[in-house]
Image (cartoon, rainbow, N blue to C red; front, side, top):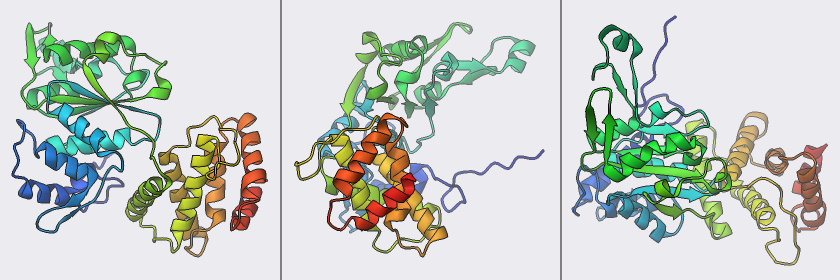
Length: 370
């Protein structure tokens, strides 16, 4: 059987390009305009990295699109941390763009966001330290040729930024393998009597979901090695609508979905529903609500609107309507069939039904629940 490997290159047919490829023009423009001091092996200065994440206009008029909509100071603290000898931990509830921010940080700092350790309950120590090519090992014994470096080891040797996703899902004994790496900046290889020392430019960005902190709580020794930045949910409805609109447009473009006329109205509706159920109170402050068991994050709102856009494009007239998003909202809200169904029904009947201009949405919600 022949397997075709698709490389991630600008203009290719990949479903989702890495950040350094998708925004290559912006990174190139920033590098050209960036005359500020750069830490060792950084592609951009800390100022330019922050501009890349937050957006702005360069002196030559080039527009840099915002990758993260949130407090500027949080981004500046995160970028500054990577310029020191402390690792960075991005903490927050699901859907607060932790992975998104970590990818763009690595792309802007090192020009490569692919040095990644994906944390799961089954992540082995080899994913953090190193493994072995067992054919080479059996034939010739331990050697550098038989050693298979982890993304962390590669980042240390090359002075790059490595990402560790879902750190708290990794078993505690595997987490502890990071302590020596982060404190001593060295990775011992006792089988060879050698070590790999980190060169300047190396650092680590980890993400963790604070709803899952009980899965594998970080030890105090490991937590001290990180500077923690908590990414909040969007502060205002307008900010959340802006985030959802931008991401839906990007995803829709990659999927060849036509832009939906007047889709902003439905995006605002989805965001309103999610924020009210998440906060446990209506936007006017008059009605208290029960909150469902799920997080109803911005990422889930993006998923609901993208799904609705696909429905409108393939099974409708291309106009995003209440019926296109109602089923997606139902699926996002009702995670626990017993408790969440009651919460959703109460919200539909007491809030949606009585709200001016929401009659079509009310009917769509009733149909989706049947």
